[in-house]
Image (tube, rainbow, N blue to C red):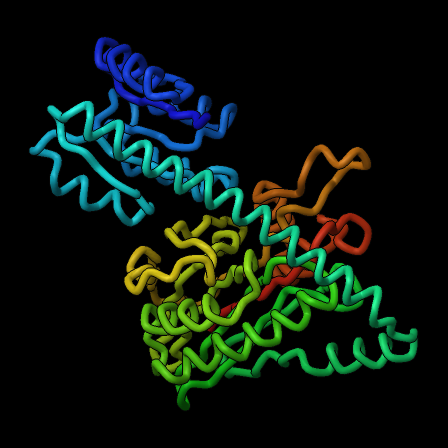
Length: 391
């Protein structure tokens, strides 16, 4: 039985929809406002959200952003209900991965059919992901039982793994700092610096699903493939996203994915542009003030849709003297800061660490120490901080 969250401020319509969907075999929750929608969605994690485009307390785009920022709701199917006059607004909602829409007044039979189709697909996707993960892990476990590496071999692999990590380039007027800490001896995080021409530097940071040896193998492939995409598409970010997603979808094992962010810094004009696909939001920093750069974008390697890259948001601005940009993997914000593992470092910890960094200090070092990554990290943890030096 699938759970549908109905969101509309019209009580009579909610009652009607609840009755029809219950008769069709769905379990139903209701919400009448944006704030109530967030609470209900976070508490119940529905299989589909049927959402009216007009709510009394919150803009539709704001609500969608809030829903998609919750990692448990990133892939929840959302259907929009809209009046004919809401066509322009409705088109804007598709950047948040809306699966379908229906115009008011609508046919109940058509609505029930659409909801049935989308919930079946979602349940099948969840089952497939679970089954694929179990099968993949079973294969890995069998492989690990069959192939036992000696301590010397692991040490040699670790040495080569460390040696292969890229070195941040030296650029006049800029400082680039990197912190790379695998959770184990071999990690699934990756990063790269790729000169596209004499002025344009591509910067990549990413994280593959999984841990250990298999994650280390996949991250090496992903890093090289994304770098190839950036070179092939000459820094055109959306074309690079399409290239990378297409190739990763074909090459990754079932259930695996790659979260990444990649951008281009023009060292002549000081302009910066990036796309984000599943990693935490980058932080733009000026002095002790920081703000997340919020754009839409899910992980690479999960969708074979040819136009999937159009749903990925981009961001551009000129980096002024004294400004900094922080890129990070989710191992930073997901580091636990208490022994019971009930509270994570989270974005608030990052913001606080930035505020506590001395004027001439290293943001990367302060965050590393504040999160106590050597003892508290529960995943690979990677940071890149790009600073344009004051004149």
